[in-house]
Length: 112
Image (cartoon, rainbow, N blue to C red; front, side, top):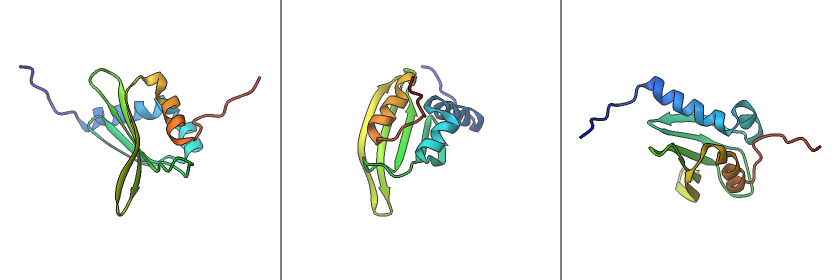
């Protein structure tokens, strides 16, 4: 049996920062109104701005298979409702899943 050790705060923060960078970093924050970032273990949660899909909170969890589980939530003081969830999302697909589930763009695209 393999003994698992608890992750340090630095390791947890590094995972969280990697998730945010894969979503688009500073441009992602600006375009989506993302704020109030929290992390714990392999999960990163944050609030986002208004959108047509009724999502105001996102939870991204790194799985042992090096893919992500993503939940899009509506959170209020009365409770939390899961609007949609995705599993086995690869890093390169995070932006597309986010844009589909929220209707918010994560970057400014240039038209050629």
